Length: 346
Image (cartoon, rainbow, N blue to C red):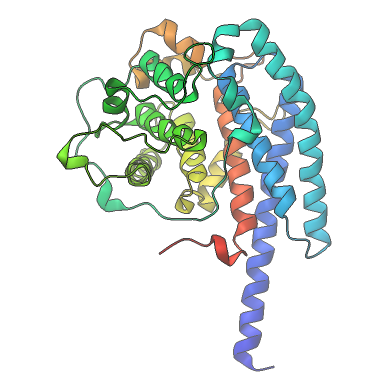
């Protein structure tokens, strides 16, 4: 065997070993997160539960596509299969509790509580720094109540047996507004993701603006994720000042789910794992996230509280759900790295 080939084999072996170690770290974090959910499933709010629903979809895909190459891989897959079974039971309890405690909100967002709703990326792509906004808007960018209404119009849950894929002018204008940041920006992306997964192929119909005539749904998603990438880079450079961990992880979750592989950075994974409570398995313990959501969303406090719920042990329902589903995204990304059909598009 020639020297060049020996070096290639050694390099490949090193990458495989490193990837296996990262998968072990992700599975350890997920095991703790699922154990926490088993205890708190009936106490979490809808936003937190949705995070675990997305995780379940990711784990189901992981167990289906896991490479059966060696004993270590088989052992890791066995861990993932166990997590799927645990989540099956816990999600049943969680969804039933939401239906009882918050029936109106449950009814509005019932479709996204099904694992089958969430489509995982089949191809990977990158963000584009040239699409970053030159400046952020100074006016109020997002109203959570309008945002919820726009989502229900897409889902068809705005009334009993409602028609889905409805896009009003106010919804389109809000969800395509440039210059938004933080949760306004991530919810714009989520709007297009939900519309795509619902099968709303004509979301931009009726937009008569000449400056937007060639912008597709996919291009909007690239614009939003390119700015969410910039936001995460700024959060890191500022040393995670304030309470920015939650939006940092949410950006990774959503843009990773949208197929942007450059969000799955190994050092960002280490940040997420570091923020997990090692004993409880949750995230955001003792942080006053209600204040953070009020600041970033610029909405009345009564609207913010529905988005977040601090559990009895001091953990954040929202951040925990977002974090475990982001970890699930990392898992599927690492598993897909060996698949040539899922490498980043150039």
